[in-house]
Structure formats: structure tokens, C-alpha cells
Length: 288
Image (tube, rainbow, N blue to C red; front, side):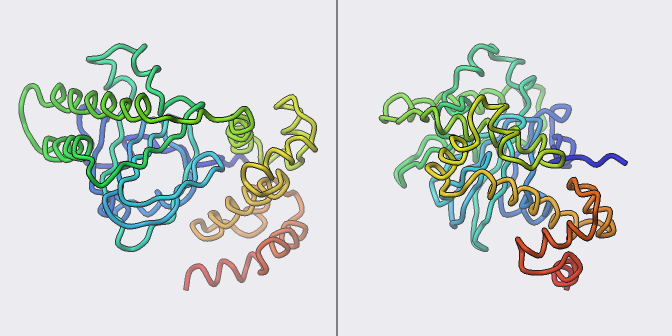
């Protein structure tokens, strides 16, 4: 029996998109209400922009957690794993687009050059309250989505291009500390972890793939995330187990197998050690 790893959502997951499933925009509060799955850890096969206009919380991208507040503008590339915790009053805009949509009008080289899509830079801008360029463009895209006109996609693409170009100015003119080599190692560890956590649960495995010693990887994780690599591996396993227990009808034994445990009783002990409750009690409490 095979189980999928971290869910990878495609654009056609979200009804209401246009241009042959090449872009999507929605008010964040409506998007979260319509698609509860987006609050669980997942990845996409498209690019993402998230602009917060109100509220607070946190946004975890490839193991690293960022503050989420009004004026935050997040950027994600295809394949990045993320999840968020939002206050009930959080509002904003969320925009998806495929590389093909951008490339219909603009060069591939430019898409690859944007600093916020480069792992050497932070994937978030914290914009001042006085910012009046990017938000109006997202609002124009939101209104344009309902327009029926021959040049509809071209107009959306032009607004998107302006958003990305103007966001680039904030990286160009505001001193930005490039991500350290350690931060890049953390991000690479996160990618490997999402791919292999079911079969590989030792720090040594990931350290070797990163050409590090296990002690060095643990030290890097403690310095950047204040957690050991082994703790991050455990959290990834438990996150997947709790997702399956809460949102699937699989038995505990099937969930155990899905996260890499042949012995369901050993999985139950592992789960209880790290959550304080049995898989059965967790499932019972999560559906009440």
C-alpha cells in the first residue's frame, strides 16, 4: 500500500480560477473558509503571494516560522511546504499563478531573478502602513478577475508583473541580510524531511545527504530554530499522523504504516510520548 507524502495542491483544486487554471485570487478570509485544507501543512505546484491587511499569527515555510501581521507580504515557489496559524480577524489577499501564466508575456529569466523567490533571501516583506503601491495592484487583480474582456488575461498578467517588480524594489533599496549558509542548510533539510520522513527518521541520514555530521546538523538546527534535528523529525512525523487521524477514516494501524511504522503498538507509544495522548484519544478529541 502506498501513501502520499505532504499534500501538493494544484491550481484546479480551487474553483473560480481563470485562464485555463493558470491563476487564482481571493480574499484570504474567504479562501480559508472555503478551503480548510490550506491551514494544514501542504505544498503547491504554483507560485503564491499572500498579503495580510489585518490580523496576526504565524506562517511556517520550510520549517522556519515567520511573524504574520498587517503589512506582511509572503512569496512562495512551487514545492515549498508551508502552514499558518491565523487570528480570527485576519484578512488580506491570496494570489496563485503558474510559471506558464507569467511566461505568456514576460521572460523566464526575469521570473528566476526575483529575490523573494530565491532561497538566499527572506520570503517575506514587512511593508509599512504607508505602502500604497502593492495593495492597490492586488485589489485591481481581484476586481479584474470578474471582467469579461478579450484582453482579460493580459491585464491580470500586467498587474502581476508590476506587483513583482515593485516588490523587488523593497529588496533592492532596503538593506537585506542574505540568508546565512546555515539557513540554506535548514531549508534543504526541510525539503529532504518532507520527502523522506516516512522511511528515514534518523538525524544521521539527513546529515549525510547534506554532507554534514549529525552533531553539526543538530547544532545548526538549534542555532536557527532552537530545536534539534531529531525534534524536527519527530514533529514532522507527528504532524502527518495527526493530519491523518483527524481527516481520514484510516485505522490507527493504517496511519502507523502511512508514517513509516510497521508495528502499530510501537507507533502508539511513539505518538503518546510526543503528544501526551494515544492516537485513539487524539482522534476522538479532534472530531468532537
